[in-house]
Length: 254
Ligand code: FPP
Image (cartoon, rainbow, N blue to C red; front, side, top):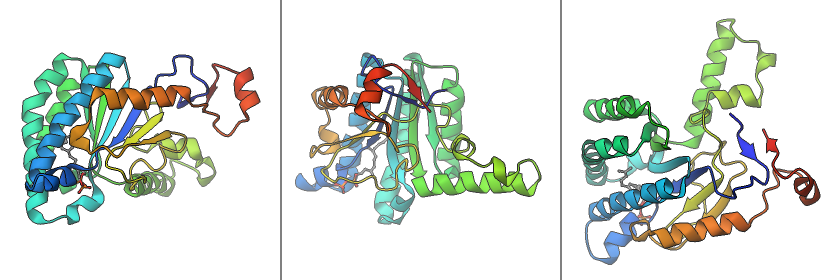
């Protein structure tokens, strides 16, 4: 599948990648436990999914829990695990009905057995859907992703299935999470911080970046539309010149 589109005609991102930041601050401002902010954050996830379905965005990847988030206080990690379990139980039927394919990317082994089983079941249940590819990054880190791809290449070299000279960008890309999807076109981060925080480090190479001070639980369709409008006004050059892009309007750059 092509990974990047130079000046794609529709000006609609095919793949949206989101860092959902600000749940904790949203709760703290209300003098409530941080877990309350995460619950409000789960409602905003639905706002985002609805928006993508309505606009015809093909893929949505959400950063739900980073490799580093395991280091948070035990009660917050516990509350998040409970929330993930509840959300999986509650939402999968509806997601399936709406044609959403769900997958999880990250170190699944670090989760408890129950959550792992629910993740497997949600993926199996929605495997045949293709209206929206929803990827939930959980126990995910961009460095982990690149390291596991490198390990997989090294294993193939050690087993004689691959020559070192055959290792190129395409070979590494093929072993990364989400390699079957177009690379994210638009990256959105709520919560005011302007960084990528070990999200899809490789896959975001040419994504357009968009930040808002709004906290994740405050997310609404107006804000998402603002991000889309901004995206539509940008010229994506993928390392080419503006003149080159203008003369090859609908070409695909790998
Ligand atoms: C970052 O906010 C958010 C998280 C670490 C968790 C994200 C989880 C959800 C939105 C809930 C449910 C998700 C799914 C997929 C059901 P933060 O806690 O770092 O906020 P802060 O920066 O204000 O402290």
